Image (cartoon, rainbow, N blue to C red; front, top):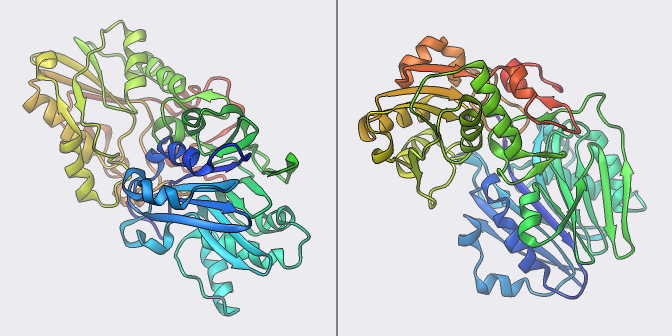
Length: 458
C-alpha cells in the first residue's frame, strides 16, 4: 500500500509494576495479544533502578525473543513493549520501537502508534535547528519534542501536556521514565488505548486482548485527550482539550482489532456479528451455505446466517502459520500469501451455492483469488459475495496503510465491474449507515473517512 511517510498500524503495551514478578515476562506474553497489529518488528524495554534495558529487532515476537534475550530483561519495575508495521522501504531497524533516548533529565522510552499529519513540518524544524533524527518514525519526533520540553518543565506529564499541543494527527502512546509511566490518547480518540490492573500493577495496551493474556483486570479505556500518569504513589489523570466530536476509527471494528477485544465499551465480535445481521437484511441472497473468510469475516458470517436462516459452513480452512495479508508490505507478497493462507474445503462446498462473507474489498485482488479458489478448487456452483463494510473510496491519512485513491477498486469500477472482476455471481456491501449502527452502545463517535471522505482532521 502506498503512503507518503511511515504510516503504521502498531500495537503498544506498558506496565508499571510491583516488585513481586518480572515485568518483561508479562510484556512478552502480552505482545502476542497485539501481534496482529504489527508483524514486522517487536521490542521490549525495562526500567531497572533508573537504567533502561532494551531488546528489539525486526521480526515476529516469536522470532525476536528467546530465553537469552528475555533473561537480559529480567528484573526491573516497569516496561514498555511494541509491535510494529512499516512500509517496505521504511522497515528498518532504526524504526523499531520502543525508542530509548538520553536527555538532560536522564533516560526516556516511548512506544507509539499513530500518524502525525505535521510530521514533515516538525522534522524540518528540527533539522533547521541542528537536531539530527536517526529514524523516519513519528515516534522519534514525539520523543524529541518531549526531551526539549522537559528541560523547562517541572515534570514529564507537564512536558507531555505541552507537546501534544504541537501534535496534529492521531496517536496513542506510552512514555516511560525511571519514575513514571505516562499513557496518552489523541483528542479524537481515533487510536485505541485501554488500561487494566494486574495485582498492584497498572497495565496499558492497544487492545483488551493483550490484558486478558497477561491476566489483568480490565479497568477502562483511556479517554480521548486524556493523559494518565502512574508512579509508586498510584494513578492520576489529566484531561486536556478534546475534539468537539470524537472519531474512533471504525475500521478497528471492521478488520484491525482482534475479535475478542473490547474497544470503547464495545465487543469487536458483537459489532462484526451485528454487521452480518444488518448485511443479511440489506442484501439477502439464496444459497445452500454461508461461508466466512477467516478470520475477520467469520463473526459477520455467523450474523448473516442467523438473520437469513441459511446454515453456516466451514468452507475455507486457514493456515494458522501465515500472517495477515492486508498488512504485508508489498502487493506481490499479499497476493502470494492468499494461496498460502486459505484453502477451500471441497467436501462441504462442491456443487453448492455459497454466500461468501468478508470484511472488506480494497484492491479486489484478494477477493478475486478467494472466489477463484472456491470455484475451481472447491467446486462451488455459485458465489454470492457479501461485504460487511462499505466500498473503500478514500485513502486513510491517519495511520491505516490503505492505498492511494487511484489504487482503490471502488474508485475505478462500478459494482457490476467489481463483481465481474472477482468472478462472483452477485456482490453487495453493507451501507455506511448500517455499519455505523454495529458498535451498539459505543461511548464514542466514529471516523468513516475511508468510506465517505469526511476527514475529521486535515
